[in-house]
Image 1 (tube, rainbow, N blue to C red):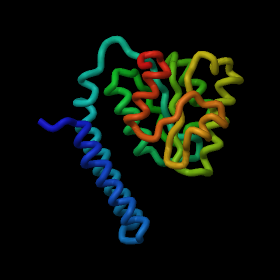
Image 2 (image 1 turned 180 degrees about the vertical axis):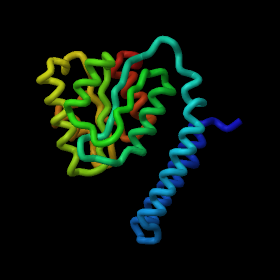
Image 3 (image 1 turned 30 degrees about the horizontal axis):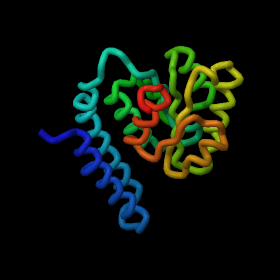
Amino acid sequence: GLDPKAIIFKGLIPGMDVVGEKFRRNEYYVPQVLLSARAMYAGLDLLKPLLTQSAVDEYPGTVVIGTAQGDLHDIGKNLVAMMLEGAGFKVFNLGRDVAPEKFVEAVKEKEATIVGISALMTTTMPGMKRTIDALARAGLRDRVKVMVGGAPVNQAFCDDIGGDGYAKDSTAAVVRAKQLMGKLA
């Protein structure tokens, strides 16, 4: 009987926050972080069907989501993808280290209305701009909204690169995606 979102936001995410803090203090090393991430993914896999049960036949939008080229961090991006699915969006997760051309290809193939790009490292943030530029060169920029997120990303960066929406976390991402699709004021 627990709400799956409560399990995620009061259990799994705070647990990973503790792991991150212990890693920063050199109390945990990469193997412990990887094991913790694997445990979190196992929990998310169990919760995914419960989150998507509420999904309806009419999708508010179609999302292609991935991490910027060169970025291999995807826990946050996967959480956003799951939350969007739970909110009824059709989601195609392109994975990690996604080249701008792959985003363009997926937008065409899946007829996406939203592109979600995540970056955890400042060094991969320019890949977000390259993806937006690639969408423009392909003549797709006017038919798709681009959302960006990740720890080093903020609204000012989103505005600078020509993005349409920024979200600081998965809950905000759902709200912003609905706003971009005209489903919320």
